Structures are given as structure tokens and as C-alpha cells.
Length: 300
Length: 269
Image (cartoon, rainbow over all chains, first blue to last red; front, side, top):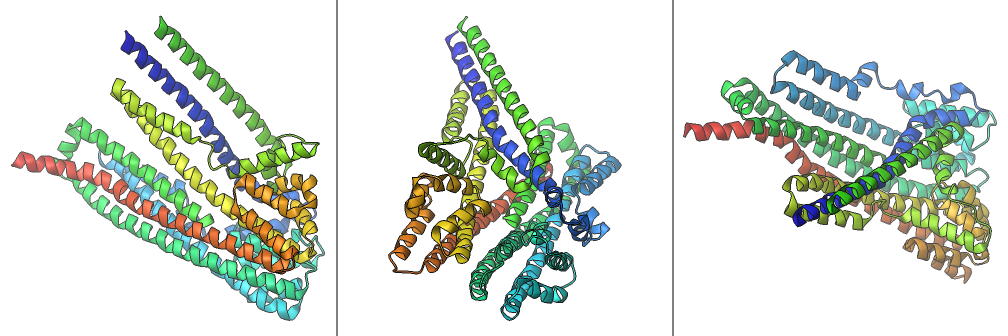
């Protein structure tokens, strides 16, 4: 009787602790959700918040259209999920169907991480070139608008060039100085946003002071770029390892699915089969974590 | 009898907890919709801070500013004690019921992982925002050349969670002694950056260094710290992911290929 009561007390304390934990966990989750919604709606709300600027100035299509339709499809989670499911239906087998869903999704994740790293690296280089060119021009032009107008045509083709041209147009059209830099904020790139903030606060500064500020900013940006480069190398090594291990896994699991003796051991022993499914769930969780962490490191 | 009471008490507690959570969710949900419909992103970030309450006297303003700053530097919503309690309970449960122990053990591991991750993220956020604060201050100082004006300007343009506490502190007696204002911020947040800034301002006031140069030095130190933390974060995340890659991808291979292989080999023998 006593042991029953004590076990009940422990079980209920455990339930209460879990309830408390869930309530504590909900708060950061809601904060995260709020942040996610902010990110998802920020482009629209930024556009809405600046009524005085034409809708076309905040057209995001030029940022999104830089990637071809095929790349956009290949980079969507849904595509890889559907391919995995389709393959599972085609194979319709207790061993190969679950593994095909997980492996296709993992391959898709590795591909998407590679692509996002490549795109981010290209954007970083373009932004670096924008900042360097601006710094060299602003000294001779002594005017932010003129310096930007001079560098816009020499930037390499792409979303950043179009965005810089929009900034120049907004600066020319006598909009509020701060609002003119909003097209750059649409990239949600940490350094470009800081550069936009710096320039939007720099009107009326003496050229020597501006030069000194830009000098400090560029040094900060260079050290930031170096860290990003190191981080990218690290993520690349993780995806390379991931791809090699996935190739190994595909080979080994194909053998297990094809050879009758292997199939028999896996299917006849319930415990082994359950462990097999659990291990696939662990792998699915792992791919999600890798993706989240890679994105976190990339956007930090 | 006692166990029945405890069971009902426990059920009541869980029910009460879920009611509180539902209410919290409903209120937050309504707030969320209103905020998203009526505000721009920067306002949304501050809306949560501004909703805390109004303050009229100096003491109230300082108290409110302190609360906001403590909230900013709080490393995790999960209390460390809670994590310890769950871990201890998982250990205690293993003496009573092994099945329940597995369940609580898994939850304990998830909580610990989330807790560590959130500590890491928040610590990085604090370093980045501190640097942004000093960078913004440096920029404003370049415009105004006056300490008080630069700090006042920051209130309107500062996008870090430190802007609101600064605004409140500037409305109190601290406005007459800005280094002390920064020292107060340092004491509350425990961020050495503010002590550093206050000391440099004192030196500049005494005429030993130029104010611009002093703030620039603090900014550089803050940047170095942020870079160090970023490097450390990237290094630890990548090494964790590497180990995790090997475990997570090899696990199905071990179970799906290795286990039948061992069985077949032992049967053959």
C-alpha cells in the first residue's frame, strides 16, 4: 500500500512537472512562432508601412526570379517529400518503402543546404564588392546618392544590382532618406541591413567622418565575412560526410531489402524491425536538425 | 484513500495548468493578430516590452528599466532548477517503475537539449545586440558630438531591446550623470561592455582621450567578443553535427544490415 502511494506521488509530481515544463516551453515556442510570422509577413508589412512609395518599388519578384523554376522546385521540401512518398508507393515494401522516404528526404536536405550555401556565398561576395566600391567612390563624390549612382551600373547582374538601382531611384525621387534604403532590407542579410542602416543615418555627415565610419564598418564586415567563410567550410564538410554516409546507407539497405535471408531476419523478428523503423525516425530527426542548424549558422 | 486524493489533486493541477496555458495561448493569439495587422516589424518587437506597464516616478522608471534589461539578459525561459528536478525525478522513477522512467528520461533529455540550445542562442543574441548598441552609439556620436544628444538620439533609432530601458533611464536623475547611467545598466545586465563604456566616457570627460576614439575602442572590443562567440558557436555546432551525422546515418545501417548479418553469421556457425 505504502509503495503504491509513493509511486502515485512520484507519478503525479512527474505529471505536474511535465505540465509546468510544457507551459514554460510554450512561451519560447510562441516567441519563435511570432518571429516566424514576422519573417513571413515582414516583406508585406514593410511594403505596407511605406505608403508614400510606389508598390513597384517593393516588388520582390526580382529577388525570387533570380533562381530558375527548376532550382526553385528542387529546393522545396515538398518536392523531396513527394518524390520519397512516390518511391515508397512504387516499391510498396515493408523494408524499402520507409527507407526510401527517409533517404530521399535526407538527400534533398543535403542538396538544399549545398544550394543555399552557394547562393549565400555569392550574395556575400556581391555585397562585399558593393561596399568596397561605395567606399572608394564616396571619397571622390562626397555624396552618397552620386556614389551609389556611379556604382550601380558596374555591379554584377542580379538581384543586388536591381535593388541598388531601386535605391538610387528612390533617393533621386526625394523620398525620405531613411525609406530609400528599404529595398536592401528585403534581402534580410545582416551586413547589408547594417550598411543600409549606416547610410540611412549618414546624411549630413562630414566626408572625413563618413570615411572613418565606413573604414570601421568595412573592417567589421571583413572579419564577419571571414567567420562566415570558416563556418561555410565546416557546413560543407558536414554535408560531404552526410552524402558519403548516405551513399553507404543506400548500398547497405538495398542489400538488406533485396537479399531474401536478410529480409527474413528483419521481418520475422519484430523487435529488430521496430528498431529499424525507430532508427529511420532518428535519421529523419537528424536531417531536420542539420537543416535548422545550417540555416541558423548562415543567418547569424 | 490518500492515493485517490493525490490522483484527484494531480488531475486538478494538470487541468488548472492546461486552463492557464489555454488562456495564455488565447491572449497571445489575439495580441499576435492585432500586432501583425497594425504594426511594422520593429514596432512588433517592442510591443511586448511596452505592454509591461507605465511608470511615473524615477523609482518606477528605473524599476521598469531594470526589469526590461533583466528580461533581455535572461539566458533561458527554462529554469535550471526545473531541469535538475526533472532529471532527479527520472532517476527516482527508475526505482519505482522502469517504463515510466523511460518516458520521463526521454522528456528530460529533450528538455535539457532545448535548454542548452536556448541558452546558446540567447547568449549569442545578447552579444550581437550589445555590439549593435555600441555601434549605434558610435554613429550617433559622430553626428551629434554630444554625449547626451547621442544617447537621446539612440532611443528613437535603437533597434535592440536595450533602447526602451535607455529611454526610461534617460528620463530619471541618471540623465545628469551618464557614466553612472551606463554603470547602472552594467550592474543590472552584468555586461562588462557598459562598465567599459562608462570608464571610457569618464576618461574622455577628464580629457585623457577623445570621446570618439574611446567609443570606437569599446566597439572594437565588443566586436571581437562577438566574433569569438560566433567562431566558438560554429565550431561546436559543426563538431556536434559531425558526430551526430555518423550516429544517425549509421544507425539504420547497423540495425537494417548489421543485425541480420550478425544473426546469419551466428546461425551459419
